[in-house]
Image (tube, rainbow, N blue to C red; front, side, top):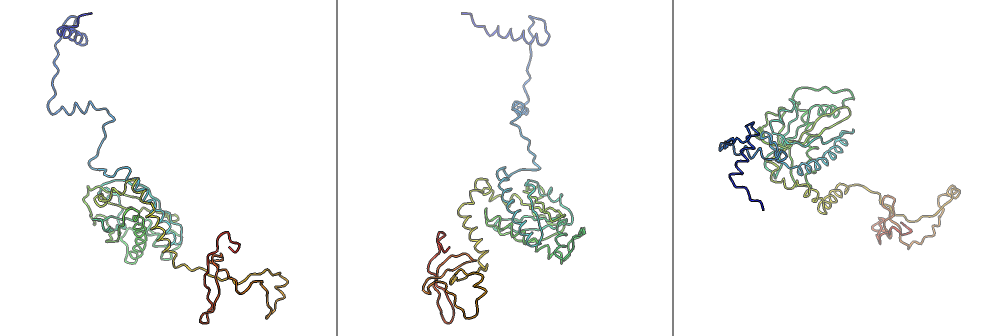
Length: 350
């Protein structure tokens, strides 16, 4: 077996290799000294040794504290809010109003206020039981056409006034805001019961400083379109306000919350909305076929034989559809019907 190289021979070979790379003559040993990095630069060596895909840029001026799954859940939740608000405003204004969610982004509070026009409808909302406030901003470019329509304006372009709203205009704007807040309150019921209430209104966003300028917020931007008019509606939620319930916005929890419990709430809400609706209730005493000739020959006092006994149950119809059987009675000079049983779908009388 060949003898292993000694340490001196290994050092000599390394010296020859370094000498040839540096241009030294063969057989000449070149001593090289590797300077040790200063103590403060050891972290730089470790940073440079990391693969590039393990390095991510983080901007401390714009901290992002909401995860991607929570952003997806917020987006899905407020898409429902946009559809409900569209239906509510369309019915109220008697025209087609489209509300569309544009984006869900994270900014600082100062970036949000700097992007707003002056004047605007800048509204402070309380959100019990959460601590703090949220901001609902509605652009005047869509508010003035809505005001013009509610006051009986025509189809011509309504002027855009760069001034604060008058008292009459504020009263109309508050009516619109109440509908927006009502839909927002109803949408958030699927996550947590939050009582959104209009607390204060300003035309200058810089006069209401609810959080520090560098405080992170979640900004939900909606586009509201009515005919040829378009404007933005922004919902600004400071992170510290929704931080206690951020776990509720995980994608799995939010979608799983729409189970039997939410289905029961929806059923109760639907039944409550239609409980006062009037329906037609009729009792069908008898039916018999009759030709047109016989119908034309009828005179007052004629008797029509239906072939039905007076002891047989009669049919009860709801909105023209037969649902029950009953027996007619006279009670205190009033005609009443006592329900006996329900007509089954496969019954000939149904």
